[in-house]
Length: 421
Image 1 (cartoon, one colour):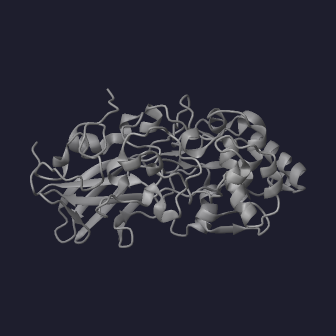
Image 2 (image 1 turned 120 degrees about the vertical axis):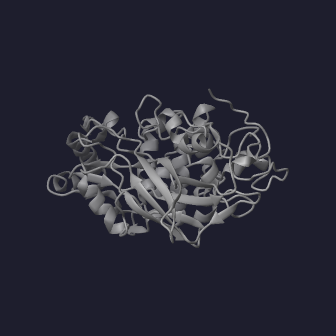
Image 3 (image 1 turned 90 degrees about the vertical axis):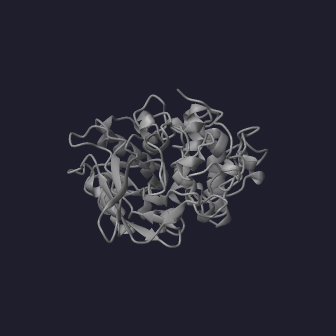
């Protein structure tokens, strides 16, 4: 059906491609920042209008989760995200970001039987506040996973069919921690849930931890890089749910389609760990000097050349490779970090300062076109393809006339080069 001036487009994505739930029921929890839904409502026209007032945006999980298989995990996360929300409610307009946003979501990675459910879908609806009339509805596929690879080295199977760390895995992890750090975690984990961030802080979550201990990302990556050195992206796949043979596939966007791996952006594990440790070394954290001295970086010439970074905050920038928004000459973004949270892709907007990158290109690591067509519900709904919104000279998805001005960003008025079936 032809687009008319009275039509609306509702674009939504999550601020991250997947929420990793690293937990063993009642034994251990490594907390990670939860996902939020971010949305923009656009009224189609010659000059489309962002609608921010007089409307209500609601979201509802289409496959209800009536059971939490790791309730202790969510209870601990609630301490740091006090507005941690159920997977339904209203999206509130955030004047600072210019987006409608949900509270942090408690997304369960398991179905009622305890089997993996990595891609829960939400229905999102925009209504006129005065009349209650529905303006537009769409579907958003989100992602959450408990598929972590700790058991590959620490033994033990999964706690549930959909992942989760078994008690045997946690016992081995805690015993090794006790031997190295003279702690008492193995005994304590028999009667209480060990939460890593209670000791090892997390800058992205605002958790300070114990003053003299490394932050949780620096500690984990710094230690494991010593044992998993001289590997390619398989070092990342050993732990993170990014393996193409797994059911989660958190790295599933266009980069995965074009065989760009973790390494091109984040560096080899030694590089990744060195950058995290370098930041802690600069902060005077004990232990950072020992671990970093055991690493030999591979993406730069020396440890001296490594630029320190804070986890979740200083990340590779898309424009490091896509200079002028063009096809990269080479994929190499290590050591070129965003300055702060505002510089992250998830918080960026196009050159007009209005439409968010997320709205047209989707979540980080799940950029259109993804390996899974279920991620592309909105491009399919509005333009009948799997590509970024408005791509392939398809400005009329929002504009009612053909456009000659590359208003959102340079190099946008062109054909898609990476075609998919």
